[in-house]
Image (cartoon, rainbow, N blue to C red; front, side, top):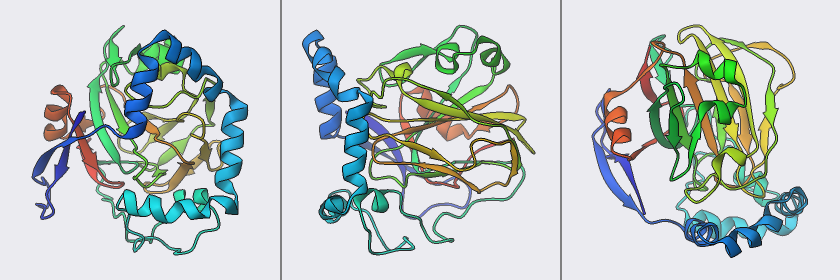
Length: 294
């Protein structure tokens, strides 16, 4: 069971009222919690997180054989296809990485507005030296997450924005500001799920540094999910100039996570999000929504 703050349908211009929703853990959550809670279950899970299983599952979801899965998935998760640029799909993954119409996710171009890179449930954390972050019952340090002590030190005193995507979310993500993006670093890992029961720091992840126009040097990381959590980033092999709202990449099927690190004094989360995060409550946000300020 998790708590999540949702905006009411009628929102104020700058500070939407929030409705506190008690979300039931889905079937995957319950299954994984059961498996990871026991040694026998953890041993049984090992074959499922091997790369060949991920590739096989990905091939099926990329094939026409997976098309019949689309309609029941849409119905079960109450997904609206009115926002999509396409209405017909050639595979389940073709649907899952669907693109939306240009006006479906508006965002602010005001220099001081810090926007969400994706649809997600957001939690924010202060970054302290040797501090551990509890991500759904899993603790880790920033150095463990980045596997880079020097880089982790650069973000001490700053803020970690954690955007947890569920399977019903839009799985494309964008750059949050104008700037120069570095080449991508990839950290290989075992594809456990980004889930309350998982060993978070073993997930495969990629990150880039963005020398942004308004928020200092941001670090944006994508974390893949169990089995089929494929990360696809555009032009990842070269440093380049990017624009706020420009698409950075997408996740194939699976619950996934985007993390943005902001250096000390560069980006302050909205007070409502800070307050909910301190209580262990996620805030439901949409791609492009303002979630902080410079």
